[in-house]
Length: 209
Image (cartoon, rainbow, N blue to C red):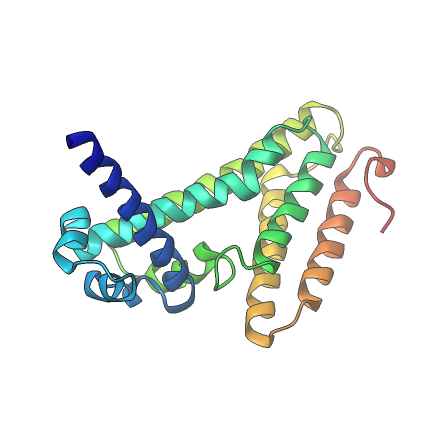
C-alpha cells in the first residue's frame, strides 16, 4: 500500500513538473503557483503543496526537471560521439533543433528564465547560475577534447571558441522567438560552421557549407 502511494506521488510530481516547465519557459518561474498547477491539472491543492511545500521549492524543482530534459535531449546523445570538431558540430545541430522544435514551449528554458533571475540573489538564481556554468563547461570540455584529438588548431583559444559557440545559438533562439521565424537558426548554423572551420586543423572534417 505504501509503495503504491509513493508511486502515485512520483507520478503526480512528474505530471506537475511537466506542466511547470512548459509554463515557466513562456511566462517565467514567477508565473508558477501551486494553486494554478493544481487547478490546471485537476489535482488537490493540498496534495500539490505536500509535494513541494513552497513556491520556491516548486521553482527549484522545475529548474532541475528542465535540466534533466535538456541533458537528455541535447547533451547525452552528443557525448557518445568521438571527440573532435564533428562532435562540436553535432552539439550545435542538436541545440538548434532543441530550440527550433520547442522542446520547451518558450524555446530554450534557461535563456527564458535566466533573464528573469540574473539580478535577483537567492537559491533560484544560484540554481540557474549552476546550470549555466554546467553548459559552458560541457562546451569547453568538448572543445578541449577536440584540441587533444588534434582536430583544432594548436593556437585555438578554447575559452573564446566556447563563448562564441554558445552566443550564436542563444541569439538565434532569442530572435526566432521574438520574430516568429526560423531564419535565425539557419544563420546561427552557418555562423557556427564558419567558426569551427576557422579553428579546425582540417576543414574537410566539417561540411562545406
